[in-house]
Amino acid sequence: MLPYRKSEAIRNYKGENPTVGPNRITSALNVEGYDVTTQFVSTVLSNDRRKHGLVNRKKSADDLSISDLQFANELVDWLGGVENAIIAINAYSQLISS
Image (tube, rainbow, N blue to C red; front, side, top):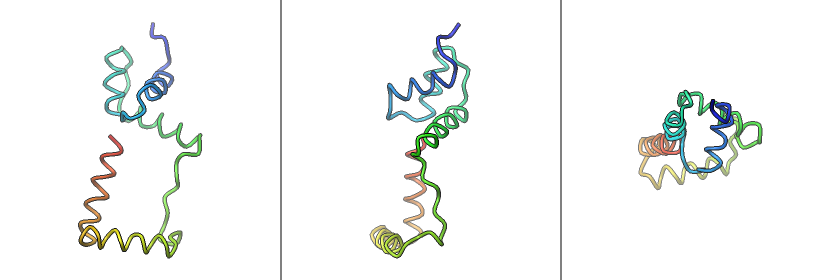
């Protein structure tokens, strides 16, 4: 019998290893005998962030301020164009979700 429910085990592991992502948590917990998927781990972590108010809702174009647009313009210029900015943002998104 495992000492924790799956959700508790995920939270505990994340608490002890705050920099690891869902893939590593899944691997570690499956080695310990928990049968979890990466999607389940992601869902538990996402729900926890939402419950604690740590999830920002996505902005729509109507929600952006002039300051947001100015910053976006500077980022696009700095990265050498919209295409490069999109590539960089997609790469960053993958990096932080793993």
